[in-house]
Length: 275
Image (cartoon, rainbow, N blue to C red; front, side):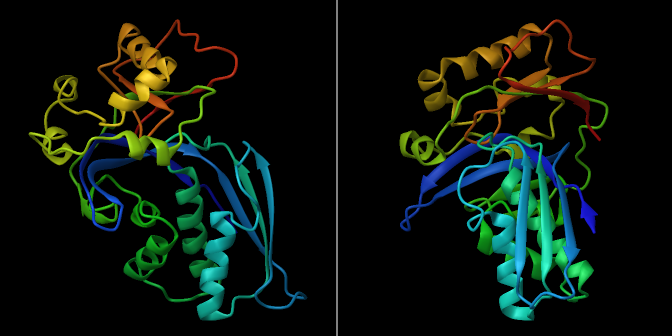
């Protein structure tokens, strides 16, 4: 069985407060975008149950194979259902450390695929509960539709009428690594005048200056290149541009195809139509 886990972007990201448990409460809108990995599972009928092997290709992934979220997703369901053995192949196209949720998406799609392949009978609510155990934003990719997220990014309110269909997305991930832990350590939580859920109801042309990513305030001084890419997006004619998540990717929304850009030989760059 083969599936194609997709990325997401954050439309606005407000860090509202630090919690007693050390985590942070936030507000953001997750929006799925068609930048995709490829994930395949092949059952191994002559291999003991509960066995999985993982083969990686494409973009480099930090950490060990044992810690990979896809393998962890398999082991988690295996603990409850005694899964048949599988051979897992993951081709990474979504860059890691980019604020695009690639690893979370792979894990959620793995849960969905195992559920379908082996007839586990899990509902979307069940799958979300499992996904949350793997990471706060993993659960978003179960339903995989525009969603307002709050709490630590795990309390969802769907936005059924919201769409960016018709816009073009220019996505750039420079050869820069932003530590999520450091980004949170430098953040100054505060309540915004309006939440992203309210702002995205406005025309996209009115988002600039209203729909903000709080991480930009601390990340841009540390990594000026990321801020320069955002400025370049607007120079190219973006209607709206922002860093996604805690970085380091930047996206711009355009009415027409962006042309004449050069973000250097080591940057991940793609342009596509949103749906």
